[in-house]
Image (cartoon, rainbow over all chains, first blue to last red; front, side):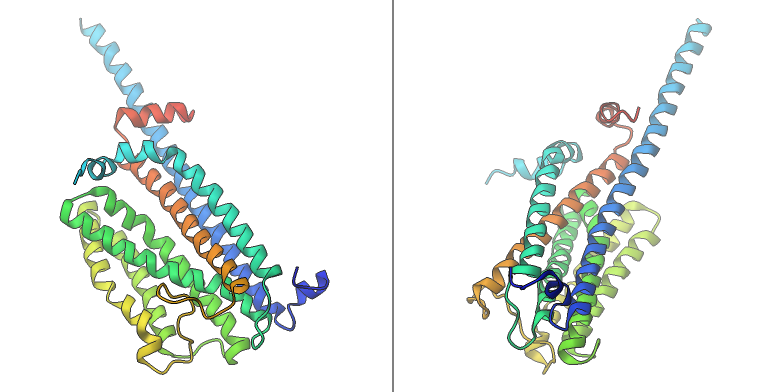
Length: 70
Length: 249
C-alpha cells in the first residue's frame, strides 16, 4: 500500500476531490452500461415472450377451427 | 485461404450459440482486470513527483480515451464489412457499439476535465486534442441519432456505415493533434513502437486497466448483440427454444 493510513488514502494528498470525482464517474459509466444492457435484454425477452404466446395461441385456435370445419 | 469461419460467424444463429459461454468468460476477465487495476492504481501505484496523487486519474483517463478511438475504428471497419459483404451482423455491431463508444468518450472528456483542474488550473481549454475529442463525442451522438431517425432498418444501417467511414477522418486528427499543434495536452505516454516513458510500477496498472476496459467493452457488445439478434430473428424456431429454456415461455 502506498499510503500510511486510510485517511491519507481518502485525502490523496490535496487531490482527494479530483481523484474520487474521476473514479466516481468511472463507476457510474460501468453501472450505467450494465443496467442499460440488462434493461434492453429484459425488454426484448418480454416482448418476444408475448409474441410467441400469441403465435402459439393463434396456431392452436386455427387447429381447433380446422377440426370443426372437418 | 479457408473462408468458412467468416461465413459461420456471419450467421446470427451461429454467433448466438458460440457467444453463450464467451460472455461469461468476458465478464470474469473484465471483473478481475478492472478490480485489480483500480485497486492497484488507486492504492498501490506511486504518486507522480510533479502532479502528486491527481496522477491516479491517468488509470481511467488514458484507457478510456484509447478505447473510445478503438471503438470508432472498429465501427468503421464493421460498417465497411457490412456494406461490402452485406453482413447484417456487422451492422448490428455498429448499432450496439455506438452508444457504448459515446459513453466512453464522455468518460475520457470528463476525467480529462477533472484532471485538468489541479494540473493546468482549468477544467477546459480549446486545445486541439480536447477539441478534436469533443468533436468525436458529437460524431458518436450524430451516428446514434442518424440510426434512430431512419425507419427502414437496412437504409439506417447503410447510412450509419457510411457516416462511420466519413467520421473516421477525425481519428488521425485526434492522434496527431499533440504533434501538429502546440497543445497544452501532453503527447502520448503509451506507444506501440517505444518503451513507455514512465516507470513500470506506474504503467503496468495502466495496462491492466486498458485490457480490462477492452474486456468490458467486449462483454457489453456481446450481450447487446445477442439481444438484438433475438429481436431480429424472433420468428425462428431456435429463438422459441431459447425462450423456453430461459422460462420466458
